[in-house]
Length: 568
Image 1 (cartoon, rainbow, N blue to C red):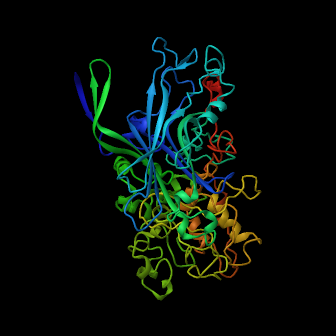
Image 2 (cartoon, rainbow, N blue to C red; image 1 turned 180 degrees about the vertical axis):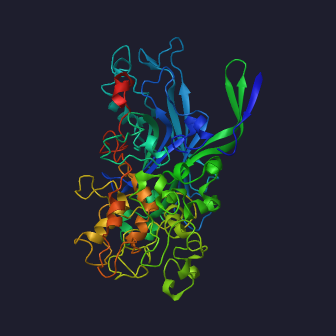
C-alpha cells in the first residue's frame, strides 16, 4: 500500500553544489576527468565520480551506487549532429548474500554486493546495446578482518587485488572499472565558500585545508581506444598534427532518476514514471562557482545543448566582482593578487559590464580571426557590456580554436589580433558546458620536470618565457598542452586555474597584457602578471598519490584505519 507519492523535480552537481541534489548523494556528480592515458597514449581515460563526502568508516550501510539511477557518460565528437554521438550508460544491481547478519561482509559473503551493466549508444540515445553484464564492484574497504582474513572475511591478499579483479574489458574494447576510490579532487572548501576567503600556501595563521582529504567517492572509469571516440574511427597515428581539429571531443556526465518514488507501509520503495536528469557535470566548478543559487537546480536538469540561457553568467562572472576594486575587490583580501585588466594596452576594459573587445566588432582588425562574425557569428562579441564573452565563454562553451586571437603572444609583436604561437585547439562549438579534449595532443609524462598541475596556464608560461619555445611561432608540443582546460588530468589544480582565468590570465597569454605593462619596456612579465601567476587557491595537490595505470585513482581509504586525527 502506498502512503506517499513523491515526485523528483525535473529541476535538480558536484559535491553538494545545488539545493536539490545535496539531498540525493547517490545521484550527485562530484567530478569529471578526461585525459590521454599516460601509460597507454592510444587511449583516452574518462572518470566520472559520484556520491560525495564518504566517510571510510560509514557502516553498516556503506555508500553504494544507486540501483534506481542511470549513470551516464556522454561524448560529443561531431558538429553535424544535434545531441550526443556516444553515450555509455551504467546501471547497478545489488544482492544480499546473507540476510542473517548485520555485517556487510561475513564468512566470505557480502551484503549489498553490487554488480553493474554497461550499455552503449551511438545514435544519440535512441538505442542502446549491452557491452558488459555482471561487472564486479569491489566492496567498501571496511578493514582487515572483512577484506583480508579467512574465513571471517573475503580472504583477499590486499584491497588492490579486489580492484584489479574488477577491471574488465567490454565486448567493444573499452576497459571498465566501477567502485569506491579516494576522492581525487582537492580544494579548500571552507575558505572558498567563506565569501572567497581562500588561504594561499604560506598562510601560517590559518593554513589551507583540503576539504576532501581522506574522503572516498564512487568512480566510473572508462579507458577507450581513441579510434572509438574519434568521429571517423581514426587512430591517433592518423592525426594531421598535434592540434588536429578532427580529434576534439566534448565530454559530460549525468545521473537520472525515475520521476515518481513511492514509499510503502512495509518499508520498501518503488519508482516509476519517466527518467529525469537530476545531476550533470562537464567543466569543473561551473554549478558551484558560476551559476547563481536560484538557477542551480535548473542547470542540473538541463543538457549542455540548451546552455545558452546561462551564458550571461560567464560573460559577467560573479567572481570577477571580487577582483575589481571599483566593485567588491576590497572586501576579499585573499584575492588581492587577482586584478582584471581595466586598461589593457591602454584601451580595453574587461571588468564586469565594460566593453572588453566590443569596440573592435565588425572592424577590419578582426577580419579572418575568431572574432569575425562572418565566420563565427556574434557569440564572442554579443554587446558592449559582456567583456568575458571573448575568453571565459569560449573556454566553457565552445573550446578554443587554433586561430587568432587565441594563440600565444609569442611572435605577435604587440598586436594581440596577429598570428602567434599555437598552444591549444579544442574547438567544438556546441555552445554548451562540456569538458573538451583534443585527443591528438601528446601526453606530458608525469616525471617530466616541466609537468605542472597548472595545465594550459603553465603551457602558456613556457611558450611565452622559455627559450626552448618562445623563439618561434611553430606548432610544437609544449609540456602541459594536455592539461586543463584541454581535458582534465587528475593532477590538475582546476580551482587555481579557473581563478587565474577569471582574473584575465588567458587574456594576458594572447597579448592583452595587464595594466602595468609598458610598451616602452616591452616586457609583459609585470608585477601584476607575476601576482596572478603566483596566486594559488591554497590546496594545490591531492592528499595521496595517483596510480601509474588504469584506473589511476587511488584505492579508497580503509575505514578501520580512519580516525578523527587522521583528517586534521
